[in-house]
Image (cartoon, rainbow, N blue to C red; front, top):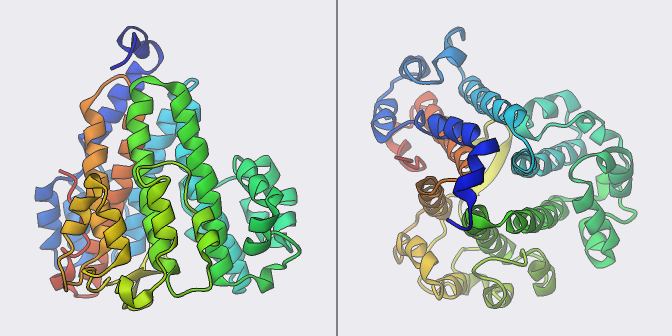
Length: 398
């Protein structure tokens, strides 16, 4: 608690803070997940969810159900709650809530650009976009012939305009990510991922500065949450760029300029280049799973023996992250993503331990998104009769 927040916060933010704490109480518990993991079919999943807040959204869905249907309806509940909070919010909370959706906007833009590159139908791509990241001109993204037109014709009037503008004005980065005189057909998956991470860097830094301006408990809590996100992205960028043509300087430019690893950890991560020493076997064993809106993405099923990993050696110098890598035993293959999600959930739940701050809104949205990822994984395992793996990626919130 800082200053006199307790005296003035409830004037404009008290009602919505009470609302979001009520929403939090409806999150699924460990008992709910244990029951869901025992389901034999997606109809059983629907029957159990009918007793929760998801019931009204699934009650009219006919059999046979599909995983995408369950995930879309659960996401619709999150969108309805978000829109209700946004309609009731005043400044600066309304701007804070809008910042939360910018990450989804970036993902949607990248999805449309990637789909257009591979000659996918625009309407099909729009159906796979996250509802929280939609904007009016998103359907016209496929019209742009290069990234400058993408900015000038489509994105200039969106909240993402400053982030694209920052990339375009940086000539060295622009040439790398394809902003200068490069048509969409010349873009490859590598360049598109660099574009995504460049935009995310600008977004996270902007969001971080905004929270610092708000001050008080909001600045303290959001600083911790955003710093963790920035550090996680830095670690993932390092792991996924080992063995690629990305240079040390290019990799370093993709790291956000804040976080616990900034700046010395970033300098060490940028020079991790030995694939064998990092023990990730290049890209490691990969598997594909269905995202919330049906698009296929690659995830590392295992990260191999991290005992000799340069990345692990760098990160373990920072005590808050030692517990994450401690879960990954020497010579044991586990998902690094799950370890990060578990740590993130722990930090998000702690945000509710304080009052009179905006961090609870960010924490709730992220917790609900994690819950939807859990439901997607459980539903896919049930649908594909892979119940032995159902606990592999479920992150318990309570």
